[in-house]
Image (tube, rainbow, N blue to C red; front, side):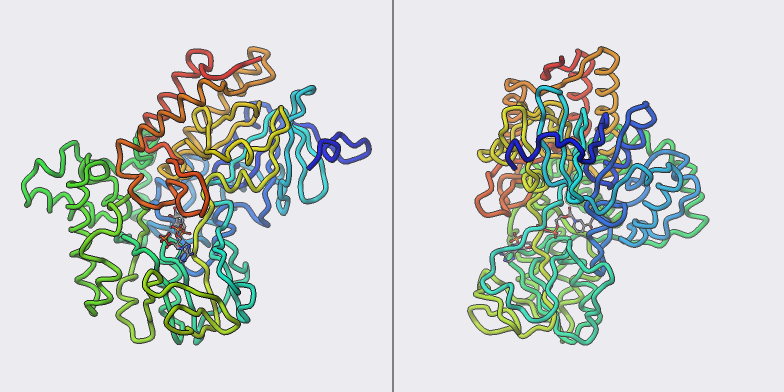
Amino acid sequence: MSATDTEFAPGKDVEVLDALIIGAGFNGLYQLYRLREQGFSVRVFDAGADLGGIWYWNCYPGARVDSHVPNYEFSMEEVWRDWNWTERFPGWDELRRYFHHVDKKLNLSGDVQLNTRVTAAEFDAQRGEWLVRSSDGRQTRARFLIPCMGFAAKAYLPDFPGLETFAGPCYHTARWPQDGLDMTGRRVGVIGTGASGVQVIQEAGKVASRLTVFQRTPMIALAMQQRRLDAQTRREMKKHYPEWFRQRAASSSSFFDVVADKRSALEVSEEERFEVFEAAWQKGGFHFWAGTFRDVLDNEAANLLAYEFWRDKTRARIKDRQTADKLAPMQPPHPFGTKRPSLEQWYYEVFNQDNVTLVDVREQPIQEITATGVRTAERLHELDVLVLATGFDSSTGGFTQIDIRGSKGTTLKETWVEGVRTQLGMAVPGFPNLLMLYGPQSPTAFCNGPTCAEVQGDWVVDCLCYLREHQCSRIEATEDAAEIWCRRIDEIAEQSLLPLADSWYMGANIPGKHRQLLYYPDVQEYMTQCRDSAAAGYVGFELR
Ligand code: N01
């Protein structure tokens, strides 16, 4: 985009707003609700055809949230009072219905423009406004630009030779056809065994005539312990909702009930350790990840004990010894929990079925995709359907795929070529009045969506109110503050086991992407720093 392309074009449809929000998921809708309540003129643009953000795009069979309710819902009583989940970990279709319920309660969709992809945004330094262009050809001016695009806005498609030649249906999990895809009786191939792969594999295993799974790294998948929620259970749970939401907002994990024991895994007896691990396992979900001992994610010896507990439980479910060695190896493929664990229901049993083949692509690399299947070094695996569960250019990809230009005309993509640098994960030097939610260098992937939408979202709303009250029209991160924030996150990474895995937390899943920890691991510690900055008049920002 050249400067002339973005110049105000008289006669063009130009709307002028206080804030333009990108994304109609939890973060974007919460911003709309709160900013509108405060009297700001606000609009949301979303590329999808429905509300829900990630839950619009991820509609592949088995797609389901990995954070149990009520952690994964808004805390406003008017919303939860008469909403009834049927499952502890709801599926994508129920989540979509939830978004419709939220819309009905908070009356949001009148200010949401769907099917509208933001293609470019440029800060007009003279007017102190963002000029935003969207796929419908419109231009919009807004004092503040608030991207709420989640961390998985840009799907990652590896550069497999011949990918475009595959003759049958071939979809990335996050670009699944909205009207579904029947895999019944077909030969299905799934590349990737992250959270999306695990979920598709569980469903494809039930119906495919043959399922071939291409695994590069074993997923250390945890027991979901899914449960249906009946009316009586829901009534009981709702009695505690207000207290649970308060606890959630004050927790380090963003879950009201996932709290690690203060002891080290190394200082207790074997029996005590087993009890703590087993109790967390039975609770299911992320309890075994973040809710056992304080040092499991920081100390290699403690971490290995958690891995061994998981490994022994998992191997007991896999009939064939060689398959067990691939899915749950005796030695950890990387420290436990340094890649996000997926939650599974019957994942490991799928590999006991006669119609399922596991291909280790480290031993048999994928050479090419042909019209009829996937050719590895050993043979051609013939397929009717190919599923790419290959993940995302997480966090930064959503931003760098849009032509976002700051006050000096430089894009975010150019600015971040040597790595991301932000103040508090919300603002970038040179990009005034751009306030990112659920973005890089904030808790994001270590914080479930609704919790962050509220705790981080309230900070942004308060900030805009403060600026209005103090007659400031501009806020910009300082270079020094961004430098300090970046160093702080690098230090946190160094003190943890996270750099030891090639994960998307570290940006290491995308060839050529700068390797750095992209997320702040402790939500409370993070929010304390945000609140301290605000209380002292927004330290680390320049206000004008
Ligand atoms: O993506 P991933 P995902 N050749 O990056 C493999 C959220 N989410 O979509 O590990 C062969 O985790 C790659 O292998 P490796 C959730 O936060 C949530 O599954 O890099 N394989 C890996 O196995 C989740 O963590 C839910 O060696 C290749 C896989 O593809 C996040 O989104 C559901 C390859 C990618 O796994 C991302 O999950 C779904 C190649 N060239 C997603 N390139 C919920 O439950 C990549 N892979 C809420």
